[in-house]
Image 1 (spheres, rainbow, N blue to C red):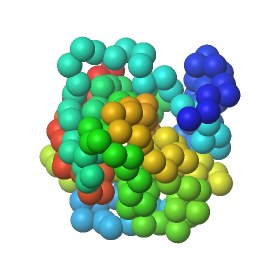
Image 2: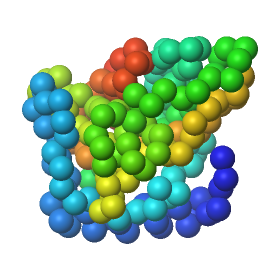
Image 3: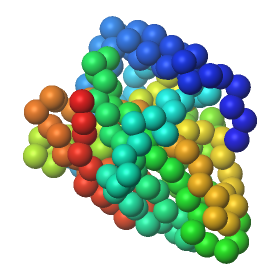
Amino acid sequence: MKMALTTHSRRRLVAVPVALGLALGLAACGGGGDDDKPETSASSSASSESKPDPQEGKSEEPLAEMKGPSSLMLKVTTAERDSGGFVTVSGELKNDGSKTVTVPAQLSGNETEIIRNGRSLGGATLVDAKGKKRYYVLRDTDGRPLTTTNFSAVKAGESVPVFMQFPSPPASVTEVTLQLPMFSTAAIEISG
């Protein structure tokens, strides 16, 4: 995975577009509990290269571990609420197997707009069971998901740092369920 920007530059690239997206009224793009499709609207404009450093603020114990297909495992290390009105979930996608695994296309979700931007974790959702709300991965104005993108295979034993950004549930909501196609679900606690 090629890293062209410094952590400081990436934070700037994420903060400004997200604030712009929120100004456009996009913080509440969560749908009803049984919605199959996210609401479609313009979102903030950020490069898919602008990724927060998943190693920052990393605790010793993961928030959750989600088992997926072909020995893939998603270890969630942080779920942080930002004052800008979004939640960033960070962690690592690891191949616990002995062979290289192709990342399933289903992780991108089924929206044409997201799929055309390459493989991603765009199919992820946060579910607030008490509030009966589902929150989908944010998108920029070009339809790119604000998540790790453009990875196709994970070598045996390799871990790939990943992130996903969602609209923030109300401040009173601290526990949500993270869902990713083909993976087990996990309850995670939002900090901040």
